[in-house]
Length: 63
Image (cartoon, rainbow, N blue to C red):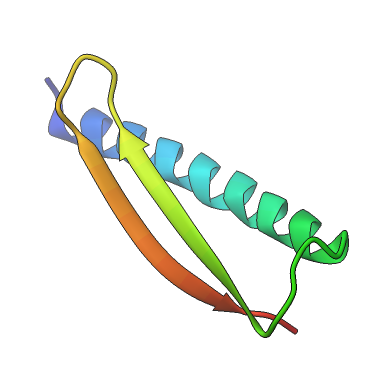
């Protein structure tokens, strides 16, 4: 496999995840579905047919 093509494919996927996730978080906050000063978030990455299961937890400060 071409390493450059592999790298670009990963970056394209991660860009889509980042952009769409940000939109969903903003939408959730705008609709008032949050309370408090922080939003606890979790992103889980899996890959079909593999043992990949990567979890990232975090907090987003609200306006």
